Amino acid sequence: MTTRNAPIQPVILSGGAGTRLWPLSRKHFPKQLLPLTGELTLLQETARRLVDFSGSAVREPILVCNEAQRFMVAEQLKRVEAPKARILLEPVGRNTAPALTLAALDARQVADPLLLVMPADHLIPDPQAFHAAIEAGTELAREGNVITFGVVPTTAETGYGYIRRDGTGEGPSRAAKFVEKPDRATAQTYVDDGRYVWNSGIFLLRASVWLELLETHAPEMAAACMRAYEAGESDEPFYRISREAFASCPSDSIDYAVMERIAGEAGRLYVVPLAAGWSDVGGWRSLWEVLPKDDGGNVRRGDVYTHDARNSLLMAGQRCVAAVGVDNLIVVETADAVLVAHRDRAQDVKHIVEQMREDMREECEQHRRVFRPWGDYEGLDKGERFQVKRIVVKPGEALSLQMHHHRAEHWVVVRGTAKVTRGDETFIISENQSTYIPLGVKHRLENPGTIPLEIIEVQSGSYLGEDDIVRFDDVYGRGADAPPPKPAAQPSAERLVGGALWGGGRS
Image (cartoon, rainbow, N blue to C red; front, top):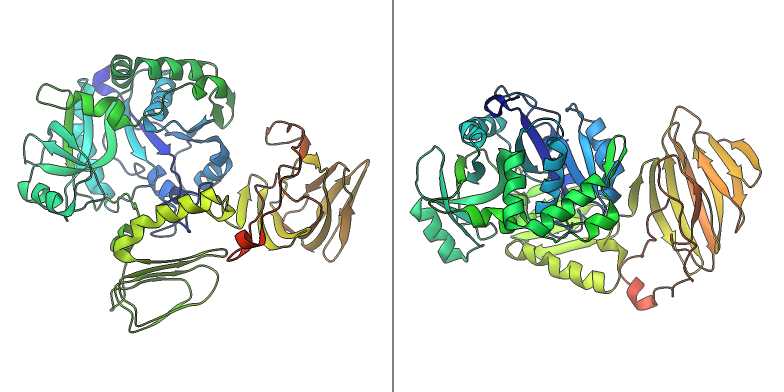
């Protein structure tokens, strides 16, 4: 296939640390997995973004995500009418430049398509305007140039980086310079100037061009990515990148590794203006700005009551939230945490998350409800020597065959039918029946029925951490675990004040 009719290869980069929208987003459940602005999650909206594109031929997307999030990503894509995606799994995070390189290497296995690089956590409410911008940059990209889409600024925003163009027209123009996030006064001069646009982080370029540029400007990264990709293994619908090889790869963003180095009058980087309502939903203030508001300027989600409240974002996840006489507040309630912040200081929530990580708080890592390929579980209660969880297993799914050194488990079926393996015996238990799994005994929980299986699990023992597990067999290809470490010290009473610390991911 010639480059003049090369198809568009969507590349979706699904990363993120889950800090700026805490407590709704977490490290293991970042914002792209959340339905922040409608029924679909940001990831699902991104996957559907080119469904109605009438321009060049479009391939099925390549999605790059963290290995730990693979089943949540795959499940979300199944639930929405979108093209089937090929999913590349990063064993460790190395920022966007290596992620794009892996996608480019994969895309180059079949011809040399145009890579349309899209972060999974952006909001673009006007897809037709986005499609028009793609068409405006396609010919230049096919000629070997690099296209970035610069968002026409609507306000003097200090939370975005900017790109200075060499012109002010509606068509493509050369990118003269990247500039960092400015202060308010500087941002206003950029808006008044007319040449500056927000840096969207969306790019269009041939796969071979990206690999060529990376080899020139970051050869060590290019070599490490090549080794990691070639040493990877297929595990449909995933492609697993080699952990050992990828761990040696330098970490850098697309902008720093390449784009800033090719900007300038003689460079190959062009900017296409984008006016499509774009937002990176980079914090609570950004979310407040894009969501519908009541007559008082409030965004209200969930079970929320207000009296004389104005210009606030109020979100209730589990309980009723009432706001009286407040202005410019962010209030976000989840099952295990509540955030209260001034709307102008919402970006500083990252400092709270940093403190919580220093204290090893699970609330910054994951929610009480944790998703697994077989279903999900939710922590309900916890004490010094016991823990209670609600476990839901999808029809036809099964947990791994496993055992624990330091805890026993009691299972009570409240809905559906459970197939239980316990040592050498296998048996069925139904609603209102229970069973006991002694310490040190191999066991497995399965759902042989056609409706979700719901059980209440009570764990008891000297140590309740989820690293106390030996896995013998797993239908999802998760490898056998190493022998468990010695029991860690239980959290102190002071650290438990304000919210229970739930254990790590159940396998």
